[in-house]
Image (cartoon, rainbow, N blue to C red):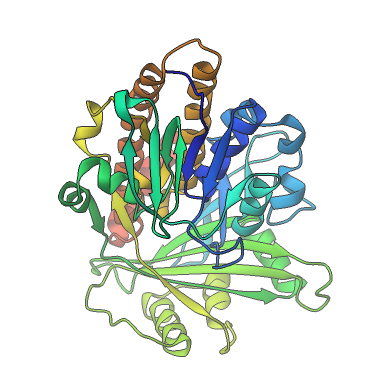
Length: 409
């Protein structure tokens, strides 16, 4: 079958919007349905690095729009390609490794909200649309999506880009199997951002990193687990004369006995306690301990999902999945959004060939899954391992660092 009707994309996150951009550039009819009532209905998260997906994104979307990515979405739009990361020894405050990203390298550190808004530009989205279920049409000549408000839409193919709670995936493999593949990691995470002055910012740049950094610290050599701290530039606003830099910190703890608090003040105290008790030193310690008392501190739950084994052979229906809906991973390796965007670009390329009559939809979906499923499984597993490594004992972390050092030589 050809794409004689619209491609229906359920989910207006990074993956769904990327696919819409690719399809639009190729002249393929599409429509995005997003459950949020508006683009600014909820917080879109903090910041992320886009890297492994960029060659495919550059190839798949409008080159004129792609050329504006840095100036519109980077955390520091004056220096959009400054995305170097570093690993820090939390107990000494010293930088261990820098992972450079300079010059023409395809890497951007982006503000997630601005990045999504950039993807949203000139894209057809219908807001406040939550999928209830779908029906495959007779002879599999398309699909009907039924929404919770009673409306429906017909299309050639349904793309489930509806995230970790994907109703599309739940229906496709069944609710029991869906629940089996979805797990919650015990790690506890607290996120916060606030604005700092240029002097403090310059110290961070010169001592640690221009962009983002991660470190671990533990109370002693014998401690079973370490506390992990991730820090990143989130925004640079020259109109804020006294404090023009917004910094994000994200502190995480593996202790299941740690309580969960309801107020920002209690969460901030808990985060500061974690930093102090684990022995963080230097600028990372200072950034957290100097956090103002009136900030918002957001708890974060890490949900993980490996693609179900059924997906290796489940074919035939005009329904396909991308991003977190099928491979949800922890953020500790920094690749989740990259894989969602890469999924969208590769699926978009396959659908373009269907649109041109070069292959069938069944062939396109099969080729897409044969590449995506092993890649997605590997990314979920490696991201899970990254959580364990960054919260391991001091000796285990030192062993990991030594292995990295040997690999760099």
